[in-house]
Image (tube, rainbow, N blue to C red; front, side, top):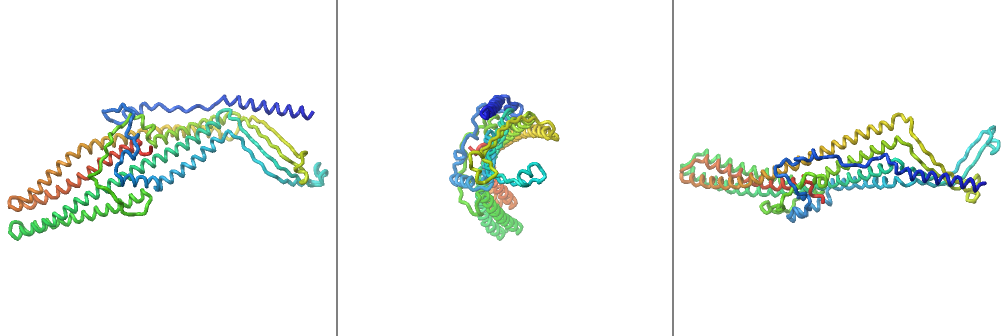
Length: 472
């Protein structure tokens, strides 16, 4: 008789298991499909020369883009020591742990442990009269529970956790791209300040000599004391400019120190006139931003995550099939606990359909749909911002390239004007105001030329970052 009952129980358990496995094909959850972004990517770069090649400068490693040995060294240090990078890595590790948990959703839960129970009964009750008012029970019990993924809820939870992990990876890549850009721009800014300091020091030396010359001209009666005072004022203006540039260098070095995760210090570096980025500027088609821009990728992974959580919310409206089992050893006497007669086992299969739950499931679905729509809008916005950044960087790069020749010609013309004015003044054919104006204009033009060279380098770096370069 006992064998027949056991056989029936096993048959029922096997039937429930077969039903659970069969029903797993009846998924409520849908598969994610990337939304149509044709409108968002059309004319995204706002340029007449629309790229047709999918190859982009962003596909280059930063080691191939930057050739300055000092800059390469500082970028390596920054990627190892920068605090934002290290924070992003920790966030990525936390997301990875959740992803591993999501993968384990298909597995059953199992717990085991010894228990001691004392029950005190009323002496007038049915059990109290039998057990003299009290009952001690000893057991070692194992409990197992498994939920069949009938509607794809567990699968969607797994995919959501994986998307969350990939979002954190893309976030780390975005921090890396921004860090490389910041280090490069700060380094180039230092080189530009060095070049401006060098020009300023040369100007100071020239103006110091000019003060002596103008004093001699005054003694000769060719100019007045006003001319001497104006020259002295220009000399001191250049000295003040030197102090400003040295202060800017000091602060910029401190900024670079923070980016490298180091204490404030001086840094070895090259010269601005040796810097060049020789790689051909290739944009790639706008759709390449979907695979190159880490922030765009992170926004899409956020959309995937919320899409899968919407699947979970939908699945919660359907019945869940759960199999539970417990077994072990149980005895009223401790010394008989490990006896074969103390063995017990229980198997329960249940199908639960939610009916009334204080509107929690409906609220969960509405919130999930709202979050999914918000993530979709944020994804499209991130793509538009990325395209705008590429467009701005491209236009600025082309503008700075055009301006450079004009700036060079301006400097050459004003240097000649300064030299000629000084010569004419010595020979009495010009007044000191012409010389002062020519000197000030020449200095401004030289500083502007340096700024223009810096802008060329900076816009190239910005274009590289805007296209999603740096993290590969």
